[in-house]
Length: 276
Image (cartoon, rainbow, N blue to C red; front, side, top):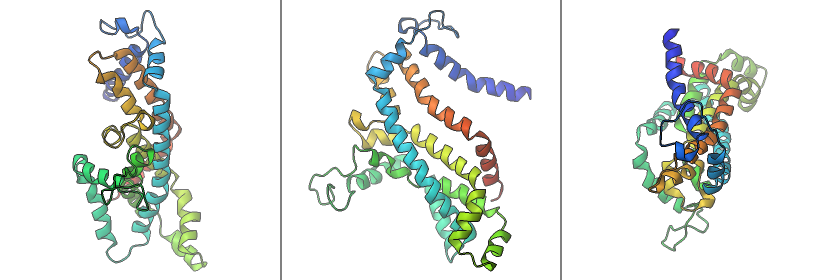
């Protein structure tokens, strides 16, 4: 128990320091910063809000993250259910192929993903034949493209449904229920912890991503919150106060999401990782 308390303290220290610097005047941020600022200020938050346009960036990140959460909660959960409860010839090979993509380094996929984003939509506005279109580059749709279905969520869904009792489905089939009704009426209500895990993983993964938005966007209108925070590091004079203030603002949605889904998240994560 003492070890757990110590570990929790070590994890919380960086967040406590971040909050402390966020409320410390910028001219004092380079000295010995007290854990509780002696002269707290909201000026750093104002600078982050105005100079980095943090509200616009957080709105963009929220749109992308919520769309990704919705798509993964539907597609990934349904795919995991199909792999676990409706096996077909070659389904395991397909499942292994999907999961194996998680071993590919992100840097290897950047160029193919960039070309895909530039070549969509197929009906027009793309650069497939060198006509100079930009496709989904510098758009929120381009930012969310690689995350619409995450392999790890499919894996968790498959593991979760593999542990579900098959007797319920067999009884429903005897009563004449179709596969869609069995999924929607029986197993989907049981999958609320799984959906919480998928939602948290998807939201946090997209919200914290920096590299792909940096590659696919180049305007302030499409930048995400991580790119907005990077503005304070791009110049020679690093503004630690506004940077930490922006980081505090960017952390709030993630903390709220986890607090609202804490019990379901822990339950779903445990259930989805026991059976191999």
